[in-house]
Image (cartoon, rainbow, N blue to C red; front, top):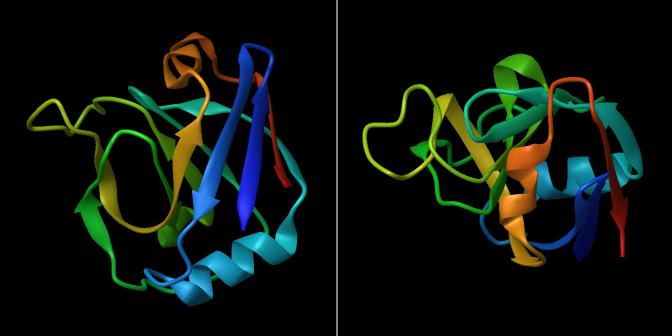
Length: 125
């Protein structure tokens, strides 16, 4: 299962890893396509989606390119660099997230241009 992430600054492709968090992956997949307005928190883009899943193999330290679901905010999160709570060069979520996908194609640096309120589209490939 693959996703296409579109912003006005470019398109990225991501691969869903069902083995890590299968309930989260399935729930997000079933809601696609999604069109939302970006919120920025350091080098993370997030937005609320119509999914309710509890913590599933949660982690707070993530990798650049990880895509996760944040249960407290029902949010889709795209990590592409340091966040305000990072303690190293790696991204760190505000609180534990369910990582379910990874960006595998495209220039992730383009996400640094996305501003609060910019449109983000996520769809199945």
